[in-house]
Amino acid sequence: MSDIGDVTTISPKDMSGRDYRVVVRVKNAKLLRQMERCGIRSQTHLSESTGVNIQTINKLCLMKIGATRINGEWRTPVEILASFLQCSPDEIIPDGVKFAPLPKNGGEIDVSIDGIESFIQSLSDPNATAGLLSDVDVEKTTVEKHFVRRLVQELRPRAQIVIKKYFGIDGPEMTCEEIGIEMNLSRGRVNQIVRISIMKMAELSRRFDMRDKTKRIALT
Image 1 (cartoon, rainbow, N blue to C red):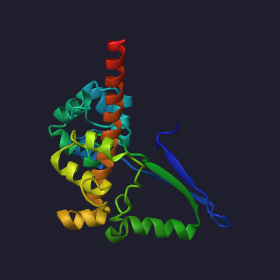
Image 2 (image 1 turned 90 degrees about the vertical axis):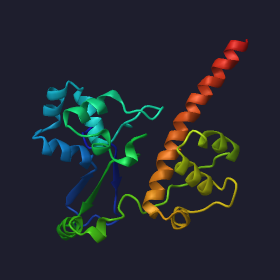
Image 3 (image 1 turned 30 degrees about the horizontal axis):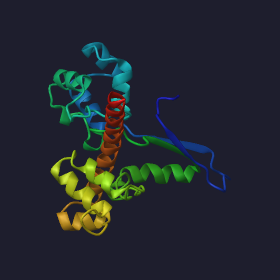
């Protein structure tokens, strides 16, 4: 596997003139900025300086693992890195990957020479890139409401409100945009809360399932 993480390949129907492959890799800018501030030249340098396993640092940099335990506490490597970089864990971990990794952190597409120029120009345009990772609502999964009601109690208060509105618990289902308007949050922020909450509830559901199995075993 390459170090770009999970890559989604987009295959245009007409490949004529598309002789250049653009590879996009999403990295943890918070962690990279703190490394640069402290004069850390690379992830290997950070590993050697802190004793944190290089594979763990790579995963944190590519946001391929969540940064907290199921109880919400920071993982030990995150605390070690933050201490070494003289900052708080919040200053090296983006909000969206505190509890779970990014579903995808890279992609690639074949383009023409004109396409390269347009793509590079778009990277420096805040208006063009502002919604790249947050404009699409999370696709709703078929979920039994009583099961969500059980798991939502484990979330933080604001996340509980968002999830209940999103899945239509105790009221009609609402989109991220509608929830954002009602709660004075951006659509992207609501989308982020929904994403994190769904992934956290998925993990909690597995834990609850194991508890139920343990109870059944104890009764037999």
